[in-house]
Image 1 (cartoon, rainbow, N blue to C red):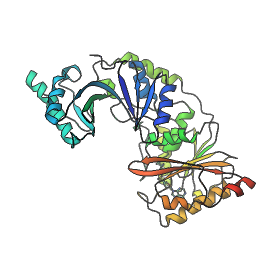
Image 2: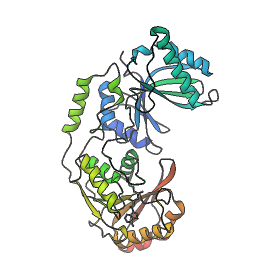
Image 3: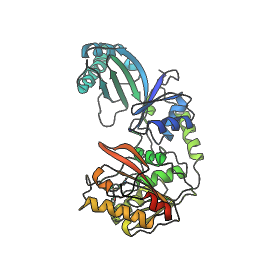
Image 4: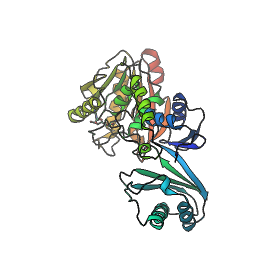
Length: 390
Ligand SMILES: C[S@@+](CC[C@H](N)C(=O)[O-])C[C@H]1O[C@@H](n2cnc3c(N)ncnc32)[C@H](O)[C@@H]1O
């Protein structure tokens, strides 16, 4: 069975706040029409484009392909309609599967129960036909099924990505509070950074922001290290076409012209950052230095800072307001002429930076609602005019 059908609408899921830039990214990859939804973008793609998006998207978390849709008002009806689809077309007895649900309906109040009924429907169909059933593997299934219910409208998708796309494969070591790779890439795109501008993450932890930047600067496809995608377990998998898409992705990797600086006061995590960058052969593109930000001189005349300081959530800070004040003081004293972007969930501490942000974007770091703030660190008279207390 051909699962990928270019006349049907696929869904690229993304974190809150990245929808608009994901539309742009998909268009840049060659998608003709892309429509923004809440935490998702809808688009159409043929098989080659779907493989390409899985390899190249920095901003999508997963790409879902629709299988069939129906109306249902209660779990028994859902069971019948899921059972009516011929599951042997997509799933074989030696493959495992898992079901995820997104439910927004007054008819279905327990998403776990929906998943259970759908699982029963699939398993019972196999039992009825061949007296055997495929196993469920919630952690690493061959076939990931998503069921979205919006009121009575139920859509069954297959997840073409398998493991989420933020699992690039380079981050083999992490500190206590690493940022999601897709969020880090999103912050870089939202900031408007381009590789001709020197970039610093002075609290780099395991290096996610700078490694994502180095991947952008070298045109490295974010999925290049991954050996597995969900679509590889589908009956319509075209290994030759995937090889072509992958080879084209490798061919477009270029030498970096960018100046990217990463530092952290903790040697252990800085080593992790270096090792992670080496994992994807980008350690030469980034300059690593162990240093307390409060004593770090600007490494270039001007440039951009993008950083994810401790929020006093997962990493505790002794006096978080004094810490954020010190960050602001250091911005003002040593980084005139720079643009600084900072993400934090600690709203009271952020105020102590003592600069007026010229942009505030709401993003989520996991479940934590954060602000991603832009500070223009003007030098000379402009600084005096703009860098006032908030
Ligand atoms: C939230 S973590 C950064 C996580 C990182 N974005 C990642 O993906 O792994 C904050 C980092 O700030 C570092 N840090 C805290 N105070 C610092 C300071 N004064 N100077 C430099 N680094 C500091 C910590 O060591 C920690 O690695």
